[in-house]
Amino acid sequence: MLVHTSTIFSRSSTAILNHISQLSSQYSRHHLLFSLSPNVEASELSQLVQNLTTLSSNTVGCLSAPAAMDMVSCSLAVFDGNCVPFRSTIPGIPLPQVGRWHSFRKKDKNAPSFEGEYGEGLDWEDVWSKRMSTQERPDGLEDLQRDSVNALIYFSDASPEGLRSSLHANFPTASKIGLVPTSTPFITGRPVTLFRNQRIWESGAVGVALSHAKNVRSMLDYHGLVSLSSTMTVSESEGNLVNTLDRQNPSQLLLSAIREHNLAVTSLDPEEEFYLMSEETQIAYAITAGDPSRGTISLNTDQGPGVGSRVRFYHRPKSSSGRTLTFGQPRATTFKFMAADDSVSMQDDTVLDNVFFSASENGFLYQQHAACTIPGATATLEIE
Image (cartoon, rainbow, N blue to C red; front, side, top):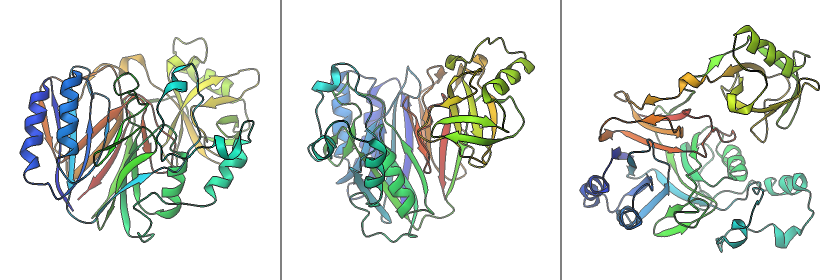
């Protein structure tokens, strides 16, 4: 199945080109999954992309954020059998279009369009329920048995809701991690940049489905989060709004927790990085606003924890920023996606064996949940 996995961090694109060239003669008939940070000159980026997309006859990849601002990063995973690449155009919830740039951006010819089918003034909840009732599968995964897939690794644009729903409905037992690639409008002229063989896409998703993978494990880690409260129960919620916790005012409960921990915070400012984490799923949601008089807090997600969920408040102190990115010896082949943290640095050029590491300021996707953008947070998938 997995015959090679590596990540290289370097201040020089030459070192990365050399690393790629060492693999090209060995794995031209295999499946390749890759990510590449674009923080190099345009001519160097073009050469790197050319070498990656032609390394194998079957490639899937994306442009990701630098793991550290002064380092170029490239990750590669090579598969031999039991790997099915896929391409998805399953629609998600369209992003609000703000400003003029969106009016001129290119569109994928194969991407579905809502406008022609529904027109303006549509009811998005109604559209969403109709679209999701089909449980359609991404291209390439139509013939796979429901329980035959152990892991799904993918790169998606910023509207992954349809794909998330499809993967969860059709492959419920598979472990799933995805990356929302770095934004590239000023690099490639596309919102995100995805690769499938030698074609470039600006929307949808690409990825691989793995079958017969042994001892697949997935986990989340939130760097620097500190618990502020005991466990509470969501007693009233709606979408991304939490209206009551233990039938009390959640904004007041959070302000009380802040005072108890002597934090120098006078309001629920989203810059202070407060979170609500589900005890059952270990998913943390950023608190974007709170109203002490009304009580409701809003979360940075399309769907927060439901009624009955057990949750805690967390805080990410300013002191948690500024760290050196380090990796221990992996106990298994490791795929790790990180919500990019500008304060992370690396000391030396490094090649990591058995590790596929990618970062993005747009966050990662874990199982069927919405994108996590908490700086420094990681989703990990281990395969023996």
